[in-house]
Amino acid sequence: MAFNPLQERGIPIEKQFRNWTELNSKPYDKNQVDPYTRCRIILMNGIEVEGQLFSHQFARHTVADELKRQLAMTRRVEQQQQKAVNWLIPGNESTLEVTIGYEQVAVDLTAWVGQAEPDPYAKQCYEFALLEDFDHLYRYADLLDMQNPKRAEEIVGQLTEIMPGRPTIAHHRHPFDTVRRPLDAKNGNPLSSLHALTLTAAEQQTMNFYMTIGDRPQEPIARALYLEIAQVEEEHVTHYESLLDPTLTWAANLVLHEYNECYLYYSCLQQETDPRIKQLWELHLNMEIEHLRIACELMKTIDKEDPMSILPEAFPEPLLFKSNKDYVRRVLATQVGLTADKDQFVPVERLPRDHRFFQFQAIVNAGPVPSEQIIDEYKRAKGGRDYRLETEGPHPVPQLRDGVANFDLAAAGSKPGPVS
Image: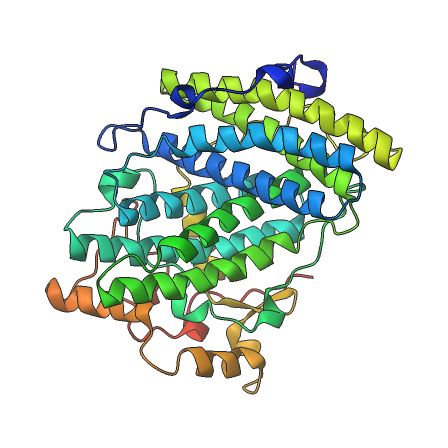
C-alpha cells in the first residue's frame, strides 16, 4: 500500500528539539561517500532552506500573532533540521568539490523529474534547463582539474557523464524570456506541483550558494566563472518558480511545502545506503509528518478548505537519484539548439535578428566570457584537449565533439518546433 503521511503519526512538535551535540552531525568521508548520498544531502539542505524562507515570508504577511507563533515553532525545528543535514558536508571538501556535487544534483534530479513529469509543458521546461546545468558541470569540472588537479569523476563516480551541454554563453537571455506559464495546482496532477517546488528549492539553494561563495576563490578565472554561472542560476530560479500556481493561498502553500518535505525525506529513506544518514532521514520524516498535520489544520482554519484539494491520495513513486545518461543524451541530441521567446521554447535561428535575445547577448558577452575562457585556458594547459567523462561514446551532437570555443548555437542539433 502506498505511503500516506496524513494517516501516519509523527513526533509531537514539543518533543522535536535537539541539543547542540545531536545537531552537530558527523560529516561523511568525502573519499568514501556514495555520490548520490552527497546529492541527497545537498538536495535536502536546499529543501529545508526553501521552507525557512517561505515561513519567514508568510510570517511577514500576516497580522495574526498566534499564527506567527505557530510558524515560529515549526520554523525553529526546521532550522535544526537544516543544520543537521548541512553539517554532514565535511570541512575538508573544497568549495569547488562541493560545487561539482551541486551540479550533479541539478543534472540527475532534473533528469529524473523530466522523465516522471506528467505535464507536457512542465516537462519541456525541465528538459530545457537540464542541458544548462549539464554544461555547468562540464565547466566546473575543467576548472577543478586545471587547478588541483582532481578529476570530477572522483566525485560523481561513473554515474553522470561530463561533457558540453547547451553552452553557458548562450544561457544569458533577456529577463522577459525567463518567465514560464504557471501550473494549476487544484486541477492538474499534484505531482507537477511537487516537482516544481522541488526544483525551485534546489535551484534557489544553488543560486544562494554561488552568491555566497563565488567570491571566495583567489584565481580570477574561477571568480569569473562563478560570477557568470551564478547569474544563470537566478534565471533558473525565475524559470522554475514561475511554474508554481500563484493563486494558492499562503496556508495552501504551507501545506504544499510540508507535504513535499515529507515526500522527499521518504524518498531519501527508500534509497539511502549509509545506515547513519538513513536514520536521520527517518527521524526528519517523522518530524515532518507532524509539521504537515499542523499545516493542514491551519489551512482548514484559515482557508476553510480541505488540504486534499491540492494533495495526492498517497505519495507518488519515490524520487530517486540514479544515472540518466541515455535520457540526457537524447535531450542533448534534440534540444541543444533551443532558446526561449517569452514562455515558448524555439530554435534560436527562428528568432528575428533584432530579438532581445541577441541584444542582451551583445551586452553581457561584450568582453571575455568566463565559461569560454576556462575551456580555452584548460586546452592550452593540457595539450589542446578539454576534460570530459564520456562513458557512453562520442558526444551526441557532432558540433560539440571538438570543444566549444566557436560553437554556433543555431547550428547545433535538430530544429524542433515551439512548445505550445
